Amino acid sequence: MYELRQVPFSVEDPDYQGLELETMSPCEKHGKASERLVAFEGTDTGRRFLACAEPEGQNCGFVEWVDHQWPPTMQNALLKLWAMVEDSKSARVNDNLESSFTIHHLTEEKNKLEANYDKLVQDVHELMSFQEDRVVDFRYLQDNLTYQQQCRSNCWLI
Image 1 (tube, one colour):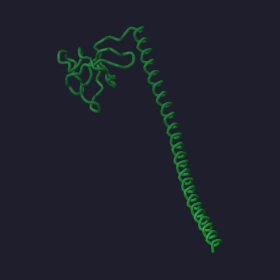
Image 2 (cartoon, helix red, strand yellow; image 1 turned 135 degrees about the horizontal axis):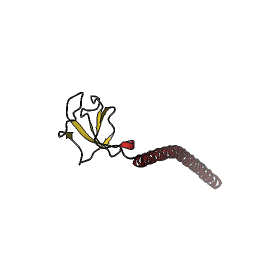
Image 3 (spheres, helix red, strand yellow; image 1 turned 180 degrees about the vertical axis):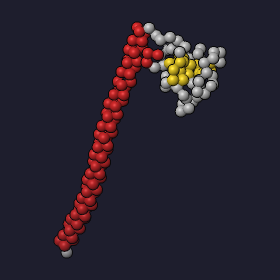
Image 4 (tube, helix red, strand yellow; image 1 turned 180 degrees about the horizontal axis):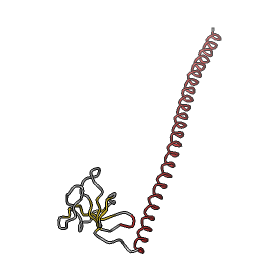
């Protein structure tokens, strides 16, 4: 049984791949040999099929199933497994989003701390410079005091 539709997503299978040259199931639109594929989506996962071998964009959507549909219990199991895969993907996306927010907040906090650190370093440099200026002032005062004391002692001697 064949149908025209979107070709299902497929997975590589070394036991079932390449062009189908043995049976007469060519793509009706292109008249070329069909490609052997194994479905990898939804309830068709694992089913073999033949499809138009043209690349995406030129592909006409020809599909002919080689395997019969899975029994309902298998289809339900596949649906549950695919739901679990989607839940896992969603959980990873949420985890990645939370990690991104955490990294963003930590980066902002780091930038604030660096700015505070830079301000503290600048304040310390200003204090050190101020202290050096005061030491210079004290030396000047000390020199003046020494000079005055010398003058007084010399004046007493005269």
